[in-house]
Image (tube, rainbow, N blue to C red; front, side, top):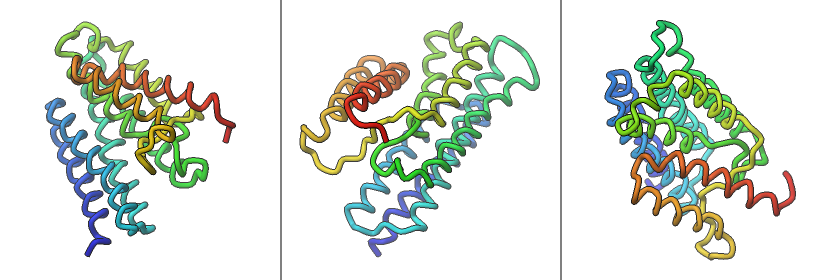
Length: 227
């Protein structure tokens, strides 16, 4: 029975992602963002539980990627599509550019599955962090509508995030092999600073969390040999 628990969590990730896609297409982007949070929690714990119960399986790995493709690939593409639809430059074709996020997320997930360098950390921005950033934009739009409604900004975000997904930037994973400070110092620092930012800024903190994540990763891996 226990071998099915991680896959059940992965399916819950997928189910939440499907719900998020439905609400994103309906323009209810805030609800879609909460669906992403649920998917992210399930995505974290499916791997954690699999390691805890020692029930890793090839089908679990493939199922995880397929679920992530919906929750952290297709869903952020739909959100960006909707944001571009609402932007200050009216065009019937421009919003489809948002699905570059989906395409590059697929490339990133495929690369992850075959890249032996990514057993402990990531090469390129991981799809959950990218998705959290994308779904934070509608919340920021509520306070700064003139900023997020800018077509130029949204196109720039789409291109930059697509690049980061498939880049060769080494990014630390938030998987914990132990809770010792000396082995996880950078992770603990990131989580503590992120918690402070989110406590004060809520969803608007996510862009700052993303910059912090990449910056700490670059600083951390500068001290280590290249892969």
